[in-house]
Amino acid sequence: MLRTRVLGPAERQPAQPVLKASLDLAARLPRLVLEARRVSASVHGIHGRRRSGPGETFWQYRPLVAGESASRIDWRRSARDGHLFVREREWEASHAIWLWIDRSASMGFSSSLALASKVDRALVAGFALAEALVEGGERVGHMGLTRALASRRIVESLAQAILADRHGGDADLPPDQPLPRLAEAILITDALTPAEGLARRIATMASSGAKGHLLLIVDPIEETFPFSGQAELFDLEDGLSLRVGDAGAWGEEYRQRLQAHRDAIREACRHAGWTLTLHRTDRPASEGVLRIASLIAASRGPGG
Image (cartoon, rainbow, N blue to C red; front, side, top):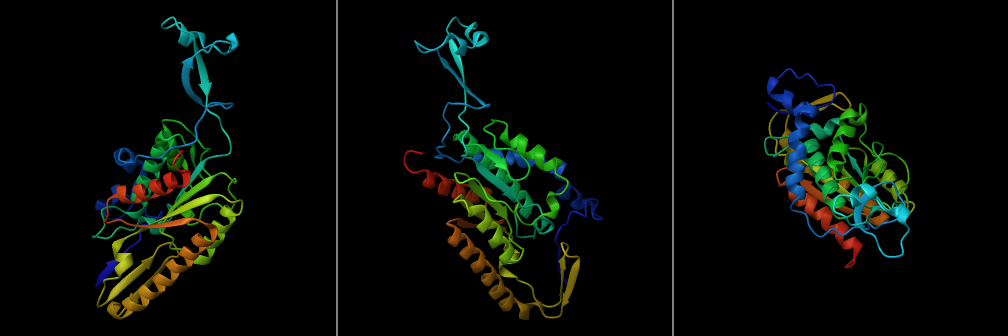
């Protein structure tokens, strides 16, 4: 009998020791952060909108320009080498990129064909994009968890916020609120929730004219449904299970319904002017990250 299982938040202490590390987010995060940094190093060409102006975030030191007020001089920095320097802060307008990383129970699934679980791949992709975007001059935050930051420690900030979030594993949809008009969203999810609900959230976020990108994380087995004979299917989000006498006979109908589900999500993205990217977990994480990065870079135009 074939079995497929979805790893849920209730299974923090699994019966099988071999699964314990895969469920312990605190133990996995250092490895995921390192992998994300490796992936982000391959991303180039994102030119952001950072410039000096009123704000709270330190950006850079620059030499004092003749005619500027002496009150702008950073005397501690200037004392190091005898030249006068000004401490510039980043201009913080409403431009920001907002991540939302799905960590619901279905994201814990990983088949024997995958290189990683969906949630691990989503975290790596989100962290890698955040670091690449900040390096390119953007401000990045996680919806409902952090403010938008231009910090060089953006990955650590996101990881700490996610680790401290006690309810993130219960939400399979992003927050139901519009984004600022000049903001941009990146939703990273398996979208295994009714398409109508996700479509409504996308419409709400885009109602102000905000741009967005949906990165759909899928396991190869979810795409192909390669089962035959008897199978037992589990849905740990709803606590349901289903015994199937002839799984092979279900395959074609399953794939048709999956395609209809994807078409509805694709139409919601098209209607909002958003992009949709499909990423399988049997492929390198860099592929999905580079695709989203190229879409964001293209939206900036030749001059960023």
